[in-house]
Amino acid sequence: MNTNNSVLLKTTFFLKNQGTTKTNFLFSPIRSISLMSGKQFFVNRYKKLGWTYKEVKLKQAIRINTMNANRDTVVKRLESLGIALEKIPFLEDGYWIRRSKFSVGATAEYLLGLYSIQEAAAQIPVTLFTELEDKTVLDACASPGGKTVQLANLMNNSDVIVALELKQRKMFALANQLERSRVTNTAVYNMDAKEATSLNMKFDRVLLDVPCSGNYVTDKDWFSKRTIEDVHRNARRQRQILTEAAKVTEDGGEIVYATCSLEPEENELNIDWAIGALNVKVEEIKCHGEKGLTNVFGKELDRSIEKCRRIWPNQTQGFFVCKLRKLAG
Ligand SMILES: C[S@@+](CC[C@H](N)C(=O)[O-])C[C@H]1O[C@@H](n2cnc3c(N)ncnc32)[C@H](O)[C@@H]1O
Image 1 (cartoon, rainbow, N blue to C red):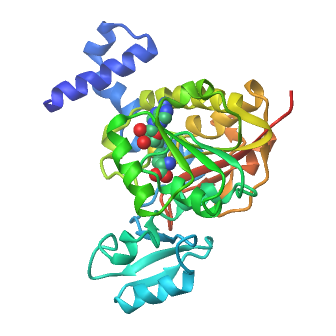
Image 2 (cartoon, rainbow, N blue to C red; image 1 turned 180 degrees about the vertical axis):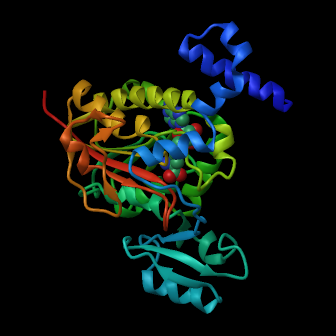
């Protein structure tokens, strides 16, 4: 597609969204684009939310699978191979790779499932559940399975995880990851999380690592590809998944909602909506990150949303996490 075509498509998107006529499009396409997409548009939004944009280099991280090996033993083995590690201060089993002459995905220790390669912020959501052992757990959006393995690890491979993934082409990566990490408590379904009620099961713990718009730290083309319409479309899809998840969660059960998006529509605004529409409340969590926003572009949100955590890019990529409890009735 040439640049003109892509400009035309983006502009048409915007105009549809705004209900603007084709005549407007003919006279002001460039102005429309600069208002609704592009780096400056998103950076200005972050500024309005109280954060100043900065360049951040993604740091590779690993997480020790303590169900398969002792943490100190793995660290010593990796250091003896010449891999320099730095303990991630806010994670129990996480380490940044400071230096390695070869890929950390090419060691015998990795192939034996002694550790997983998992970005630091992405290691947070699973740690927010209380008591995972012997629980019935749903991982609703599972591939490539980094968090499924982490769940199995904290469950010590006990009871059961049901892992769902919509895209068939992503099932292979998920199966591979589980097999390499010696996960034995997981049943995997190629299935839409929006149909989770068809499983006829109730879950004590539900992980919603929902599909999202992502962020600029993990995707160098992010600012040139994303429009506000993408953000709105993802936010709608996330609400549908949240709705179905609430139906399959036991009363008193926990739902951890996570995105790697910086956009409030996919984060605080969705949680504000969930508090009103679903039978859930926000729980206190203790983890890395800042309080969730309770005022988004002038809109006041439920005060309990400050219990969520927003992680602006710094030592990690951008992330948002929230723990919800399903209320009785
Ligand atoms: C953020 S990624 C999950 C990453 C994964 N939890 C991990 O830690 O490795 C979201 C995943 O959800 C899948 N997905 C998207 N829509 C879905 C749906 N409606 N039901 C189930 N999975 C879905 C995507 O294909 C993608 O693999």
